[in-house]
Image 1 (tube, one colour):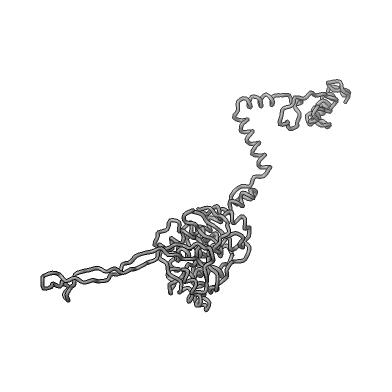
Image 2 (cartoon, one colour; image 1 turned 180 degrees about the vertical axis):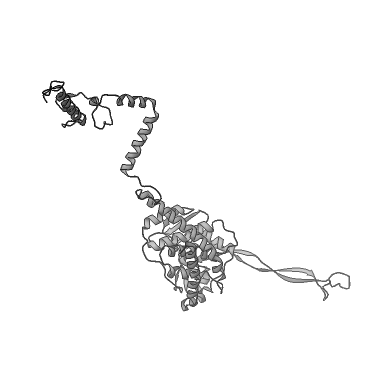
Length: 404
């Protein structure tokens, strides 16, 4: 199955998984509780993210108290802007039923006092759930993924390379697994988590950095979270790791519309982002593998052996010899030498001028290159001399007076 077909199949499964979670009884209990939380405007969501990037669920002091939770001592609140309408009184002209000013007996317009409501704003303090203690909130799914990732350290190195911003590990006090810091342009990951949770969280935050760093303001927080978690889930599932127990409830929490239109509208973005990240991961892992195993080459690339390298070197020397004048002259002189004065042995790489002593038919060189056996030329010359001596009647000695 082609990659794009596989990714389409996986993204389509997201909607089925989210729907199954939404239909569960536990999720309905969670919805009942979540309905009590305030729905902050886009501007307030930005203010919360700037002051506490890892915030997940915010509520005012009294709101937490009504839910059986209490703000921890010493916690610093998150300042937001809350609407504060107020009433003012103003004297205006009194109008008749036709909308015309009423005139008194003196010809003056009759005045009346009316109250008007004016929308104002004030600073208000809210607190994240991590800043509170008390009654547990309903939850669906698992708090943290468990499991190992094959070649975890290598994978983390690849993720750090493909991330558009630095990735660091720290002890996140809020209890969040990680966050993308918009102002500082960095990613923070909770340290000492399982390998699978760490990789999943890294992918989630990397997607935020890739897609949402300069995203238009009209993209909702829900849409951003759906795209980030959906992409992380798809990439890991493509690689053979299942995060459904964590990702599906997470996605469900940000799917507020009944027909899941926002999630469905995010699927194309999730699919494209997943394909981009998977391609980068595969390419970098392939480069690392080739670097660590240089002996492995593609099928269409010839494999050089020691023998072929020597052959290429010898051919190169011959080419140089045939094109160089000095080399050609030298070769010609060497070929014109007397055969009996030229040993049939391979020349050493460095020229060595050796003294020779002829003892009968044995040629001995100081470096031992000649060996202790007669050379082929010596044997041929001896046979030639034997025939010559027989023909002349002198078969007792050779030309040099050595007994035969």
